[in-house]
Length: 163
Image (cartoon, rainbow, N blue to C red; front, side):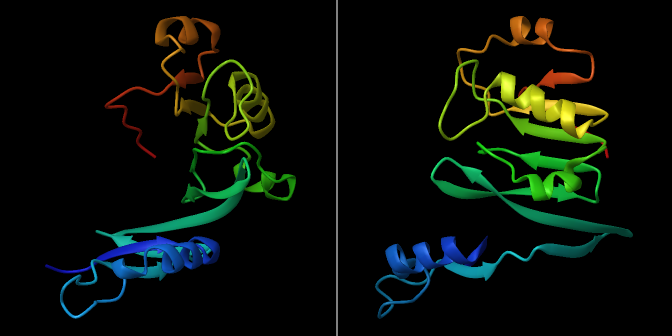
């Protein structure tokens, strides 16, 4: 019975407020507000137990729209739904412990990275370990794994990372 916090950048907030305003504003109790809109900040800081957590958000291209990727404590980047990372932001992705990166399939796609482009970015960024995510059903796990170097793995259900 409480509203759910959601977080979005300026363009997404504008789109949601225009097309889904009923989710944010009550209408005579017939349709109670179920969501509370919050802006995504470029840097988010909070404490969990005694650990300080920093999350950096970076805008990337996802075909004709933008998407946001996240870097956690300058150690792990999560970049799903991406077709292009701006060169000005490359510095944020260098030498991470983990790079989790979009890899839809082998052939080109207008809104996602394919295997060739993912591997090219992994080489440029030089993480200790890379995880390919958002894998389409036509990528066979074992076949894909056999083509990758030891520091790159395809994601799988239940995968967990310690950083």
